[in-house]
Length: 338
Image 1 (cartoon, rainbow, N blue to C red):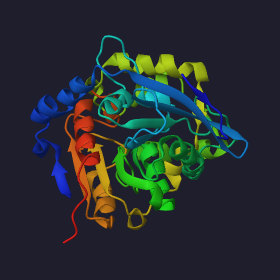
Image 2: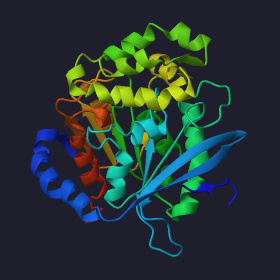
Image 3: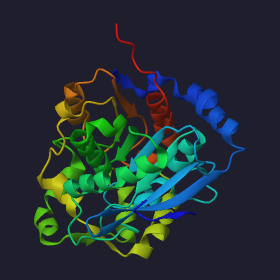
Image 4: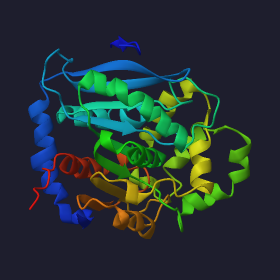
């Protein structure tokens, strides 16, 4: 591990993607080809004012001076877990759950970070709302660009992390290559989970942190009514990884999603966008997301519905459907102007 100080296209139903065959001949084969190379990891830090923010990186092989730059994928975590349990989770005996490993093996330089008040990062004492998350990303990107030499990078966000990523893409469009929004919420109209949070607005306003104990983490995988979509070992692995940081978490994204939606303007998100949702995701509806999708100005866009998936696609038994959709979108050739 390396410690680096700061100074230095249409709507597509997923069945139409040919996912089964694609995984057999594409993702799995690509990872098998890359298997002999060792995945390297490193820790980095950025500063947002006086707040020290933790960044984590994985790629095939240690960086070498003068090498050709790899494409960069930055993963933005959601409301209830920090970065490593979100994107580099180990669930012994249950298969691969690390999105960082998956995309490192596909040739990406993969980064993530703990937002203000989460995980290994310091805390400003605020509630780490969406605006704070955008400020975190603005502080982190110069470190990523310095280390990778990439001016434009791919972004992926899930849940409130997707809102953070979309809001950042709106604020700094020149830094975004391609953007993946998973389990996104636009206005939240008709979404069961957003309705439940709206009943707790006063609670979220009263305290910058909220309870996030083992029971709450388990509820993430049951609240949409389809616990069978997840292996119970996943929640226990997250609990083991997260409880060392305590049993509270910032409340800002929950407050934003309950009281302040919408938080991103699709007309101002100008990069290519892939929107992905589980068919049983309680944080949004098809109509809510399609309203955002239709208003995106870039014709290079896609909307994918993952079958037999609820809110937490990356932790589901069908997580390979998500990886397949992402792999093809991120690797798509740029359209040729006519």
